[in-house]
Length: 302
Image (cartoon, rainbow, N blue to C red; front, top):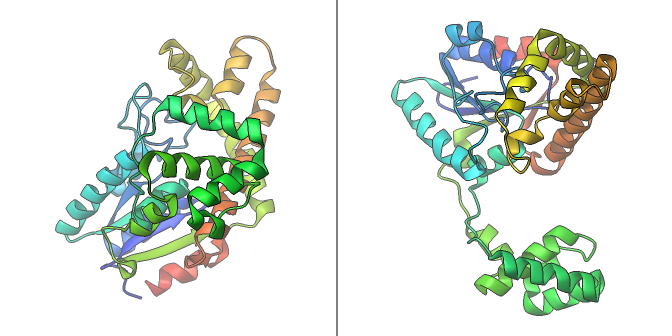
């Protein structure tokens, strides 16, 4: 199996051992690892985001980890621009890029391209939402498909967020949202990628999450959140939504006990892992599924 000429993508639910697996592959094929996790980009969220350890960096070169300030905006488009640059640099060094993480949208942007829809004015968006509320979901949907017939093939009236989004895009740009999707292309060819999905059994992931949650809370997450609180990061920023911040803040405010914090973080992480798996089932049908028990056999074949 010749993977050296490919761009290797590794996706899986949180706590599935993606980073360790990526390092093992990198050692075998002289690869370099690039982050595809939206929380691991932040400099100030080392422990809560389960960023790879310094000893891992010393073994294999890592990119796009812990480089961005939590107060600054970082979008999928920002990541895509940087990851494309990193892939070219790694390829020039005659090494193999290994993109690893759990943010599905990052991978989709890389493999399919990122939809370039103009920013729609807030006032127009609010007006459209008010209209949806006033006339109801069914009538609004009828209005949408009259304005944008393409939407009928892709949406249902119950898909509220996407229906509203499709209508505002059509109204503002006079172009169907689905035409934007059709016109969007990746900078890479399909056969440039070797796509791996770590397919961990649900029961095993739950156990791994419980163990990891206890470790991160006892190994510095509380101090990390103390420092984060002092930064006064607005709640609207992506970093503020990191699992564990709200729960540990409640503990610091003496509103809850430490064992409750661990349980709540564990529950939220399990929910997130489930969403990641759901994303994979809907968007990664052509990815190669690898059960953790089969990783050794896979590595032997490389």
